[in-house]
Length: 140
Image 1: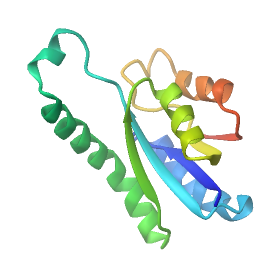
Image 2: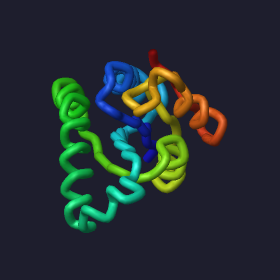
Image 3: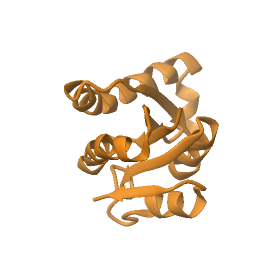
């Protein structure tokens, strides 16, 4: 069953990508929608203050906060979906998960809430387009 992968970060653009995916799923013949949240790993000295269990709780809470609005949009449309979170560099993880899940299409916002968003607008989206071997639809 073909899957649409929708990376979400809580930004307005990622929510618009969820809305676009709802329209595209019928055109693409995709029955499955997969929401993906990628978070940067906590590195350096700060990492030493947290156990793996603490980090899992932290990452899970952040993913829940980010998934909630997208989940509500899909529930309102009566569309079921799966969710996955990943830790790593956003573009590389999006493409990796897309390959692991045999995604037929990636639908994502053009820019998000990354720490350097003001300086690197669209850098994740540009990198996904260059790495992906499936169609990528960018939503502004």
